[in-house]
Amino acid sequence: MEENNRNKIILEHRQGEALNTESLNVNGGKKLFLESYGCQMNFSDSEIVASILNKEGYSTTTNFEDADLIFLNTCSIRENAENKVRQRLQDFKKIKKHKPSALVGVLGCMAERLKTKFLEEEKIVDLVVGPDAYRDLPQLIEVAEGGQKAVNVILSKEETYADITPVRVGSNGVSAFISITRGCDNMCSFCVVPFTRGRERSRKPVSIVAEAQNLFEEGYREVTLLGQNVDSYLWSGGGLKKEVLTEEQRRNSVNFAQLLEQVALVSPLLRVRFSTSHPKDMTDEVLKVIAKYDNICKYIHLPVQSGSTRVLERMNRGYSREWYLDRIAAIRRIIPNCGISTDIITGFCGETEEDHKETLSLMEAVKYDFAYMFAYSERPKTLAERKFEDDIPEEIKKRRLTEVVTLQRTHSAYRTSEGVGQTMEVLIEGISKKSNDMLSGRNSQNTVVVFPKENFSKGEYVSVNVERCTTSTLIGKVHGKNVE
Ligand code: 5AD
Ligand code: SF4
Image 1: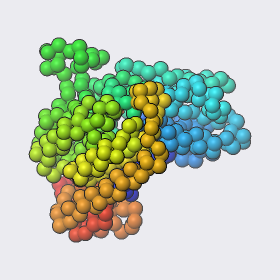
Image 2: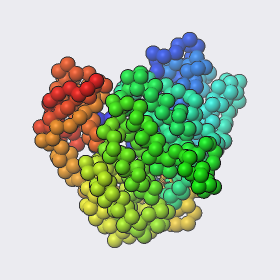
Image 3: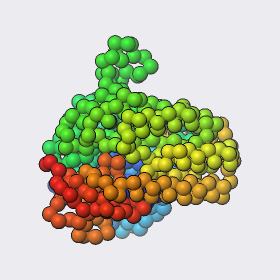
Image 4: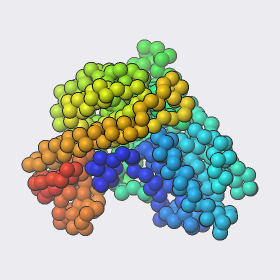
């Protein structure tokens, strides 16, 4: 995540970024404008889409007025995420007027959730393509070019796009995402993801390790392994579900701890991050692997959602407050210097003032480095929508959210200040946003560190003496360059 976003207490993930691979393929002369919304997985999927269309001769543009294809990779997680996409579609109406051949496509979670309804609701849309149907894009575009509406929202139990090399040109050349699982089997009652991204499936470990190896050889120095629940990663020869494995098959499978170790072994100079961990599935075995390898970053994103066991039960999260705090204690015991972040929802169905106070007290107990915080937004078809009343008035949801955000701000500032006076290894990601004379990177705990540029450049590891900080950024001087 970027410097400014990462260190602000943001209420939404970064939004609406357009992929730019202009320098890549220009042979077909056709141009694709591709804008992504929502989670890191969507950004990673957009790199797959760009790769598939690049093979078809499309280059990408950041100017939608130039584009032959205008694609939005959408998010359904909260209502306002969907509203943003609908608003954005309005901008494209005028383009269609002066360039009628331009096609507008909606990809991702909103496409999957609304299916053909999208075509009725938003007349401007020509293609509706779900997250497991991107291989079909060339055919769908042909259909749309022929003047018909094109839809593929079939979810797959197998698709992992394992053999497609994502196009990375939108990135900083230092950090890249690698998807390791798709879909989610958890059915948290508030969450639309299991409906929009389908059943959970793990990707073959050799293809993951090969992707990390290739990235390293291309000069990348950090990979983030992505999944809705990375801890439930399990490769058992393909297609086999955990529940039906024999003892022997289980012994021969690769779990997340083993995968993490394999990726860490690609090179000690390749940093490894991962997201998202699930409190019910995160094992001590995983924590021990993180502790064992210096290049596995000491940072865990462990969404709690609520500090009240009663609410967690209604959320169908599969753990209690005590279980969660035990996992935090395990992290602190096994990885003493670990950064921890979380996700919190305020105003879930039936949340009392008492429940809310339990969330605040849990935050006090953990003192997260960082948090993503949201007011509950009811999503169609979810368990919560069917079972519970969305009974917390909007102003109470918002007031509780403000309290959570305010408290988190003090914790983030406290955690950042702990870095002052320390010497830490930083992977340089580029020029600092605030000054051309400063470079910016992150420490293992994922905090942004800025320091004078001197002769250093991105992709290098440096050792920084931290002298001071703002609420979210560490500021220091390079004390030495680390091994190349
Ligand atoms: N309302 C509010 N926040 C939600 N999240 C998921 N579904 C909802 C919802 N319906 C949040 C959770 C999750 C993060 C990605 O988004 O905190 O961890
Ligand atoms: Fe949604 Fe829960 Fe799956 Fe995360 S683990 S994607 S919150 S259902």
